Image 1 (cartoon, rainbow over the protein chains, first blue to last red):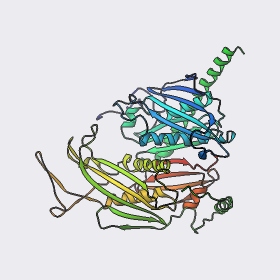
Image 2 (cartoon, each protein chain N blue to C red):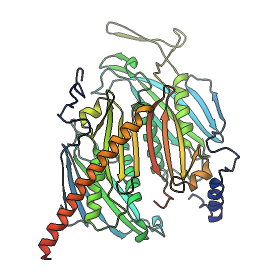
Image 3 (tube, chains in turn blue, green):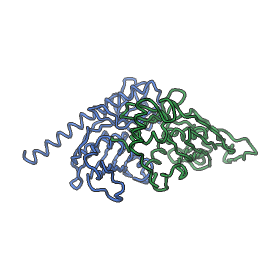
Image 4 (cartoon, chains in turn orange, purple):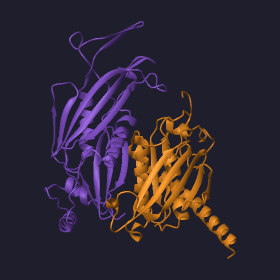
Length: 245
Length: 244
């Protein structure tokens, strides 16, 4: 859109946030009764749902079973009504396959798969409304779902996107900021150790600015970690009250 | 045919050699293999050899109607195929994960970084635009497919010439190569991918891993840059054989 200022002179973005500010995050765990673990997250207007089944026996061909660890199977699906224009194929196209592979890579780094040899952990993520930062919302939702399922993990996996406009790094991009065509970085972090589970960047960014954008994304991911930690503790507190402990 | 597994002693040998900063083919840690580029008879056909890894690239163009939300831009389409002759493990049904990953990385590297001026591919706004299709075929797999594929794609696009078109009012005339010389594509910059292989949880780094080194690596980091020092794409990935 012509004339749309992504960052005003006073340092405000289109939705009134500051450069390093995240959108409002609301999350709930234990959304579905049937699944082993489930979670729902809203990051601004981006809404994602994650469901975890497992660890259970390998479905399908037994030959895929790994003798020393569990197989992590991720499927990403984005609802046809999630974007401005109605999408024809909710899953099965290249982008969804790539997202599934990236989620699998992210969670294989975090889940302690050695504890469940010859079994399978399924993570299904559904995006209900996509307003930018879909990968980050999916990772955050899936982390909460895996925790809800009681599957042991090394650490939280917190993800956030970052961009670069007018010499400033922006954290947590919305759809408008993504569509403007500037550089976008998606980072998935294990906060305690600072290990990067996944790092992905699109579009042109001068190498001098990379450090700045990475730092903004890492800081945002750590902020997300604080929020997710609070959600998990709240959930555990509620569950223990119900059990009468 | 399933991939032959790597024996433990070979894996240990490779890892120990890397710890001592030695590579099997005698390269230094940051050395590339020799690159050879040759061209075919058609415009837009090239073969890139990175060591023994060989990729064939072919560019073709067609006049189509544009996408609804991008009425004044041409269409760029990339397709990388892992031919069965490249490695015994590549069978029609078995390659999907690797294929999706490579294709998406190529798409992001070349399309999202806007290396081709798509607005110049527009003939009649909203009705006719050029669709440029880049087909890449892997002919021999000896590691580092992504670097060879990105070089082949960029070289093929630079070499390609599309037929000249002229628009008079409502009439669109497409000239054959005999009537008017074909026109090159307008290329803003040339992004080239460089792959770094990680070993021992990031302690050791190698550039341009060959097939054996790829089997024992922990993870791969691909960075695409152009000569203006701009980073076009970064992608980190874990190898499925790594302990995580």
